[in-house]
Length: 326
Image (cartoon, rainbow, N blue to C red):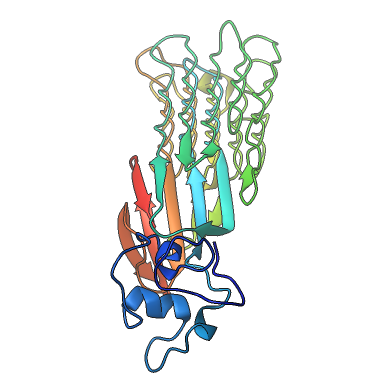
């Protein structure tokens, strides 16, 4: 609401701004007590005398949390000198207001499939969502022949190359939406017969010489982890080039030899899949699945996801779709 800053404040009743019951998300006519835990929490008086209505003036039954949303990474491209998959888009809010009694829908996007055996591009990653805020799935890594531009997505996929063709990396589509800041970067441009593009990452663009774009690091889970690194582009051993490294150890590495496939992006970190070395025998690296993490100070206030605690914070981690109830 929050409760009004002067005048009468009642435990019950239907007057918005005056009813403690309504501020707590309860029925206006519910039976409650000044000694109830949630009432004391609202008043900010954990024990002892509550002064009515003074202790309730201007109080709001809300709390703030850090929230991280990471989408699924794109799959790497097939055959050789194929592009790396783009990292899943990333959105982060340092202070998001949560209202008790409210349900917030959570969708965790899966990673895109790597390009199947033969000259095929990968698939885009899937979106992750918290409430109405969406992180976009990573763009696909492109095939080598006929050479193709990388796919657009949260971060763009890397371009494939063959002969002396040059193709553009996929563009980044991740935007910001207050209070969230969005992160995504373009995939790498290909050139010549060997330089495929690395997939873009949340912290930097994909390289034009097969390197995946770097991710971004957060300690929201209780330890510092990288998220949303781009997949490395595929190399070609007959030209003396190796597959590119995935971004920040989160994106999959690109394959090199004729029997080497790109590696997958890290699960629940939104890494892009690695592009293949020269092989017709297997799919390129798939993109890593996404994640949604909610962290707030103090003891547990909500439900949903896997609940842990670290450094005085309660952490809810969603590795599959569900609901957070504040």
